[in-house]
Amino acid sequence: MKGVEVSGTSQTNYADAELLELYRSGIEEDFSTLEKILSDIEQNSDRTFEAMDQARCIVHNMKGQGTSFGFPLMTRLGDSFYMLLKHQVAQRELHQSTTKLYEAHLKAMRSVIENEISGDGPEIFQQVAASLKEKVTQVVD
Image 1 (cartoon, helix red, strand yellow):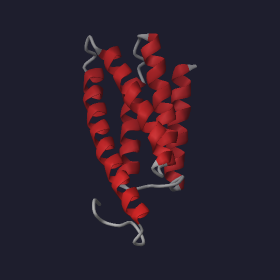
Image 2 (cartoon, rainbow, N blue to C red; image 1 turned 120 degrees about the vertical axis):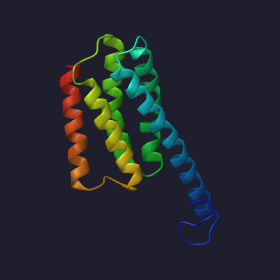
Image 3 (cartoon, rainbow, N blue to C red; image 1 turned 30 degrees about the vertical axis):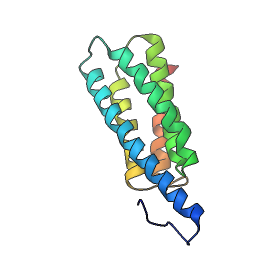
Image 4 (spheres, rainbow, N blue to C red; image 1 turned 90 degrees about the vertical axis):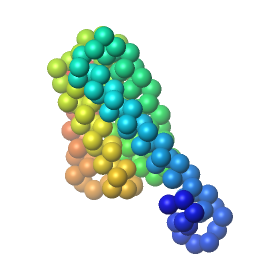
């Protein structure tokens, strides 16, 4: 998308397109890091909770940037993902659902970006976000 105008010929739209491209590039790096961390968690290594804390920081940034770049669904998914990670880091004991919930959040967030789902997204994605939040709430309560 670099060098391609989103709409019109204004300098602002060009700058917005470049910022969006930088966001997408950065978020791809975040997804890669989160996938590596998932592997550490699945192996239940000595650094599981250190890795989860690193993931928590990454997800915090991702959820904060989501709405800013037109992806409020990223923020919504990021909220429950962050809540899960924060709880697990504090507990220092891995809940049996954590790995699956981590993976489900990661897949949902990646799907939002890959499919360029801006705004609230389709009903199915809203249901996924609500379901993930409900499942995380069951873990942290």
